[in-house]
Amino acid sequence: MIKADSDSERTKLEKEIAELRATLNRKEQCLRHLNSTVSAAKAQNQVGHSVHTKLTRDNIARYSRQLILPDFGVEGQLKLKNSSVLIVGLGGLGCPAAQYLAAAGCENLGLIDYDDVERSNLHRQILHSEARCGMSKAESARIALLQLNPNCEIRCHTRLLCSQNAMHILRGYDVVLDCSDNLPTRYLLSDACVMLRKPLVSGSALKMDGQLTVYNYGNGPCYRCIYPVPPPPEAVTNCGDGGVMGAVTGTIGAMQALEAIKVIVGMGDVLAGRLLIFDGSSSLFRNIRIRSKRPNCHMCSDQPLITELIDYEMFCGMHATDKNNPLQLLAAGERLSVEEYREKLQAQPHLLIDVRPSAEFEICQLPKSVNVPLVEILGDGYLNRFTKQLEDKELPIVMLCRRGNDSQIAVQHVRNRFPMHFVRDLIGGLQAWANNVDPSFPIY
Ligand SMILES: [Zn+2]
Image (cartoon, rainbow, N blue to C red; front, side, top):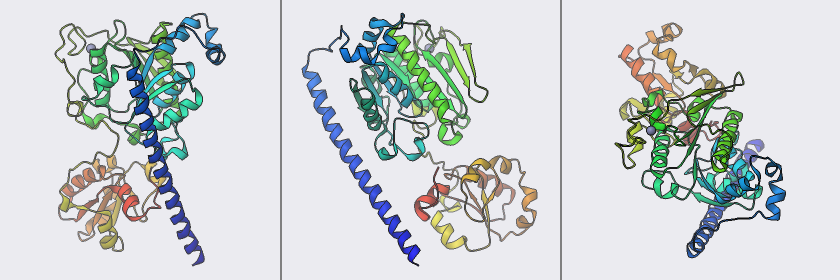
């Protein structure tokens, strides 16, 4: 009894601390917003952008190890100092990229991210911290970058990049880094960079693999030259669903910084017209030649068919965020809320099938649930396991998954096979369970 009391007291205190921290983060964000409004107003009053022609004493000490590189030198350092780079996405790729650029002396950085820091980001998004969970990612990254190099001028854009704001935002930068995690943003950035004639350093990482190339540089292709049309939405996996190893995003992100530096300084052989493929499992780097500019590319050819930015979410058939994109395959009456399930079904005999991949089932699961991954359901591989239960038409069958999307596909399939059974799925899946029923249930 005493233990239960102290447990609930602790939960209450933890909740209070989390709320206070969120309030503090919001206030700090307001303050930074005000400060940046003031400095933007000041900057507008100044005439032009000041061009540095000399390195300071601090610059020489700070950048000495790269200054002595013969191909780089003072001239290279001044080019970095006078250039500006926009980093789109302050996640697994954007964090290391921004970190190396700021450290190297790219002193004018723009950071764009609509999202806030969550605990599940921290294993790979290494500019953020436990204490800054709940803060906007762009703001959190700015704090970390200024600690690393206080010479930097960092502008935060805490909103979703879209067709309406992209040209305005991108115009102010010399090089753009695509560190995003979705197709609509990739097409949007590529098109906007073609229109504004800016090089685009594009990175991606998923599971144990990474890719890197520079579009729109020299005579190299744009993203549309390589991928004129987007793949079907169901063929696309993001890190939230497929998983990713933090050191893989770190490898690609650091290389994006390197390519941006090469582009700005004009040194080395920029990775344009080539694609670098990194296989983290076997530690192999490969370089493949990709096609050159497509003569009839709708975007970057001499007679482009597309002359303004379009609706990229519609073009790709998916959202530009990796947030919950709930599917609506079943009617409301064919589904159960997590509360309904707990109140009406959980204590009754029923068959609870969790259709997530087994690696995810191992992380956490509801009591009495059995794991049959969706692929097995669709291949009818589960039938032998439940011969006896399936004979009983009265026995309710409940499908569940992480967010309530795959479970609907499972219900459609099983219902077609067993039309007489009561088959439902849980709306919002385990995430809804954690949010609405059991706050102690892990979210991943
Ligand atoms: Zn093109």
